[in-house]
Image 1 (spheres, rainbow, N blue to C red):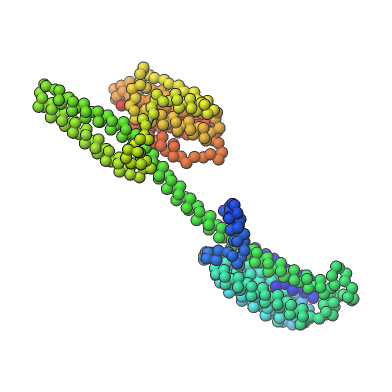
Image 2: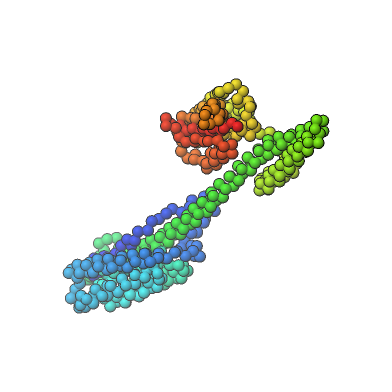
Length: 485
């Protein structure tokens, strides 16, 4: 509470100097969001079930240090005021005056551990000192300490319902004390004498007594209202920070789950592609082996036994592969049975590359496609799984250029090569696909990285090597080299 001194000097409690960062809460949109935001802005409709975490030993240690510094500064300020604001009637010894002022600072040591209790004890101390030693209650340090107790109660109280009940009682009691002070202990003549007003003629817009009462009321309303408002903002900011931290943890868990699902889905897709190609060839081997067993006449017993073994092994391999893929497909989104299989179609290969390039060109991306073979027919002899991996690599590379780069075009090169056999190594042949562009990363379009991860997994599946990253001269490169066996 703030009272105007007889000498005309007004003392107001400054805001607490405790640094607490305000973090904006999550954005609420729409009528429901605005209604919830308005509801949360009202102290009595706050989320009372949430409890602000205690600051911990380090926080309590800072409270003690802060109180000691504030007490020292208040003692210095009290000595300054004793030289000009204390009259002859203030007969208490200096040590008593310092002890009385320090009494309210003792409670502030526990302001965040027992915030409501500290506010009630500080209020009682303020009233007792205001009655017995009014000059001490009007010092800057004393009122700043009381302001800090009010602020801390609203900012750190864990039982919010008990807090607002205690705040209501304290504010009502303080303003009742002010009213009683005006009506019982102060007469109109004494107020006029205090401000050296010789007549009842108002100098301002209102009479002297009315001006003094309104001034005191507004000053105390700003004092208590400011402490409550700053404390409420601190509590709400802490609540929003914890909500944002919880949301960050949830988002991180969701991102990890999405990454895991993306890897599983990509591997299931690769497993389906391998099944379509490998299982088909193994089935053909089984059929041809069975036919050979029936027509061979030379050494029929030995040939029949060998071909029967081939047939049995191939059919067992197909059965085991289908069993394994059935387990892998159990978590896939594709429906089982003939309805699910009806949506399947042959996987693309090198023959579909011109159509893929044409689609990107029609969408505004200038794609230049080049093929280079170190020997005629090298690209035509690629296996179906390898051709599919090359197609998917080019498809993902061009999609990344389209979505995440400022480049207006790209160059796709499909080449084959080989090294002749030497004294210490065998001949090696390879096929390489390279996609380059000269653009810069487009802001705000960073991807998840699942596509590049799929390229690397496809390369590893065929024993290939990848070179994915930025180019020295600018732009981006995706280069994958597959060995030819």
